[in-house]
Image 1 (cartoon, rainbow, N blue to C red):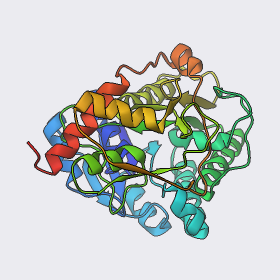
Image 2: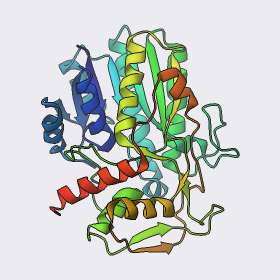
Image 3: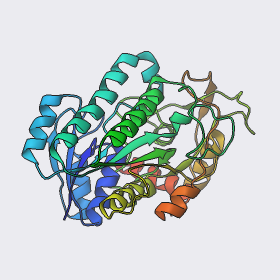
Length: 342
C-alpha cells in the first residue's frame, strides 16, 4: 500500500479525491491549514470509506511545518497538491497573498521531495485559467498560454513553469498537471460536498444556497458577453469524476506508464454551458424556484472557455461518468442535508 500526501485534503476537491484514493487501496495522509475547510470533513470521508485518513493541521507555505511533516512520514514520496488560495475575485484584490501562498507552498514541497526521495510522483492541481481568454475553442493542451486574467490564474501558470523546470533538472521527479475546468456537485452519499466559508465564489454553491433560502437571490456577473444568452460560458463536470482523474494520474506515474516526466491533461466535460443554462437545468432537475439578478461583470473573469478532453480520454482512459443534471442534483442533496431541509 502506497502512502500519499494530500495537501489541502479537507477542501472540496481534496476530500473527494481522498475518498477515491482510499477506495483504490491507497493510504492517505492529509495536510491542511483549515483556512477554507473544516476537520469535520474527515468524519464524512470515514463514513463513506470506513477509513479515517491521518490528518496534520499545518500550512504548506511554512517550511518548518513541512519539514516536521516529512520527518513524521519519511516514506512519503507521492503528493497530490491541492493546497492553494483559489478565489479569482479575491486574488485581484490580494495579489501578494496569492503569490506568497500558492508559490511558496509548491516550492516547499518540491525542495523536500528532491531532498528526500530517490523517486517522487507529483499530481498538480492546475486550472483552465492558464489559457486566459483563448483565441480558439475548445482549448487543447497545446493551446498557447494567454496572459492570465487574474493573479490566481497566474499562480497556476507560474507553478506549471516551476514544475516543468524542476522535472527537466531532475532524474527522480515525475509530474502530471491536471488542468481543471469547473467541477461541481457532491459525493452521492451527501457526506461531503462544497462548503465555502462566507459568501460563495463559485456558481453552484451560490445557486444551492439561494434555493435553500440562505441567500435572497443569485447574483449573475454579466449578461452582455458574446455568448448565446449573454452570460459567461464554462465547462462544468462532476467533482467525483475529477477526483477519479487524480487517482488515474497517480497510478500512471507509479506504474511507470508516463510518456514523459511532465505531462498535462485537460479535465472537463468537453462542452461549454452558459450560466443561465446551469440555472435553468438546476431548476428543472430539482423542481425548485430560483431568484436571480444580473450585475456587472466581475474583474478577472473571462468570457468563455471549454475543454478538448480527447488527450485525457485516450491517454489516461478517463471519461466523465456523470451528467450535468446528476452533478446539480448531488449538489442540491448536499445543500439540503447541511441545512436540514427535508
